[in-house]
Image (cartoon, rainbow, N blue to C red; front, side, top):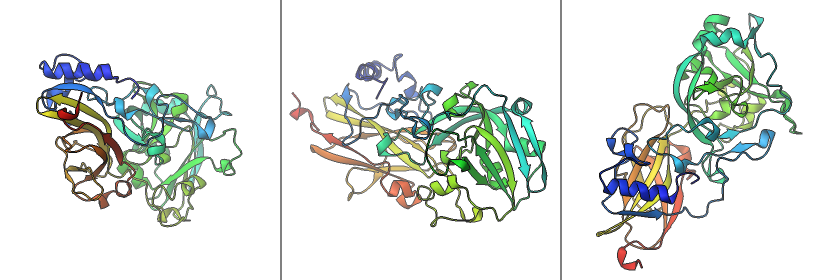
Length: 396
């Protein structure tokens, strides 16, 4: 964890023991959704590292162009900091090297019975409105990136319902193709197609999709889509097209784009669909992940508090369960409050007193059935820890 240090943890422990005075987690005692319960009385003596995970330079931008990445450190999340600043938001693909950010920006609308129109972005900006906090997760998010290709942000943008009112609504059985600039310095063969995705008009409206122009109260950063990007709440970020330049209405027999074909495996498609109507929407599935394991010592022994996040799904989860052995039984997470919606993530915590030293697997399920989420079922969010001193008798 990059900016939540062991000293911060110890200060938080002192605040707990002293009646929750001001400190890093002073707000955690309120009992509101996403708020952690205090562990047993005692002293916070540090955290337990996760096993077998790569060293990730969280918060640093690495690579270039299509290979550019910046991972967010989930271990720094607290109840007071559930929306990280924009300069910590994850990045997958950096600003195109051959794109001039200073140029006059317009969006071209055309296709399927509608006359072509080139609309200056400045003419659309008066239609922008606050859109609330929404979570973005890259479909490639996993162990190799420290589960850091995920973030939440507060957005402002132009809802598609207003765009349809301004430009005209496409036929209900047609498709809306949203394309962004992708002029990177690369030899990748499909660059000509750029980054683009097909949506039905009903999908865009049901998701509350919008063209984002601001993030956390500021204009978008270049690497995050400046000056305008697509946001599709509840969908993986492969469909959140950045640097939007064209919006095209296509007939019902439209074929999927090269960009969509690239993500067929990650979005669990049936083969490689040719037609858009056979491509399943890449909606974020229910997920939960431990982000840190705190170690507390008291007269009764050592207690470990597992802190994690939960997100995704079409509806808020009713329950969250954890187990510590791949062959063991799941048990309810000791503190999980169902969120009001799934627009963003929520914090949870679990108090744990392992009886023996050894390696433990932290495995989670939502609503009592792992089959509700294929990524959870495949172990994408599973982590491990080594407990060397489970009780005070073995401590120095």
